[in-house]
Length: 397
Ligand code: SF4
Ligand code: SF4
Image 1 (tube, rainbow, N blue to C red):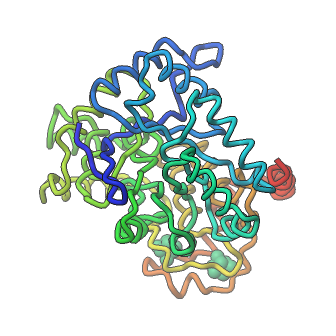
Image 2 (image 1 turned 135 degrees about the vertical axis):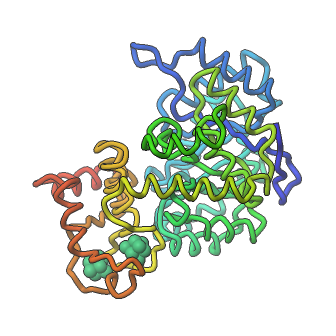
Image 3 (image 1 turned 60 degrees about the horizontal axis):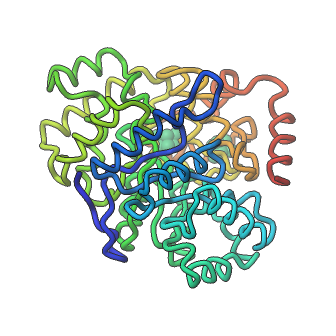
């Protein structure tokens, strides 16, 4: 296992982190504790020392906490968890949620604690107004939170505002070779690294789709280059090739996957992907993009939209609905519109055709017209009032 240092503390972090969102499940729906225990124990043996869970991942904190305790591994690993900020109306709520995480994880401290899923500066501002920084300082002084960061799914502009508004210890972003300019993207990665923040990568394989659902032509290209290397290993190599990446999270559900990921993590150093490897990824990217409907590169030059529409994320979701599956695209469409975070809802159907985006788009995309197509495919009639009602409920949770 290779390690990269948290520059702020000198702590060595395994470049492969264990994503605990989707532990293997039994047919009954509960976490398969036997297999999960074997996986976690083997991961630690192979050098993984970073485990990422969250308050809202069903059964995850409990499973991780009980396995680490049973195997006596708590002191050998770094445990992260996340605060569901929409549920925090006053600092005492944060205490309650945090205490629950500690109890489930059977620990007295969380090594890397994140504000979960910020998509806009406004959400963070709400917490600042509430006095959350005093709460954080108190937890840190008591040694209960060791490092404080945030996970992020908004635009680059919002990311920049958030990282400049607080002395964060680290951050977590979505990043992979198909999402180089999506959300915080490569610019956000560099921004955070320049500030000395470790950057944790989520969705390194686009929810497994860069491992198991690439177009056949893309898989053939990868196999021609190296018949023994899995598509997943190429996605991971591309990430670790970048020195700004600190930890890449992978949700590993089988021994085979764990072994494959760990093998790559034992040799994939920064700068190790040669020119031929980078060209190969570029060609694979081209094959995946060809299966897309809208030639949006996610550059975000069209942003911000005065109606708050996340244009690149909307097109990314639409393309995924063709390139991968309708459900994948629909899920990301709703997330990018603000549904699921309790943030204000900005649906593409709110486009007023002002034309700002069209003038800025280097790809010459007729954004308003294409948004109509997106809406037809991903936003069924009657969706808008239902979504607003769901969002209102989420805000009250
Ligand atoms: S045309 Fe529509 S999508 Fe484009 S900036 Fe104006 S409101 Fe936003
Ligand atoms: S400017 Fe064009 S290519 Fe860039 S994100 Fe906007 S729509 Fe996509």
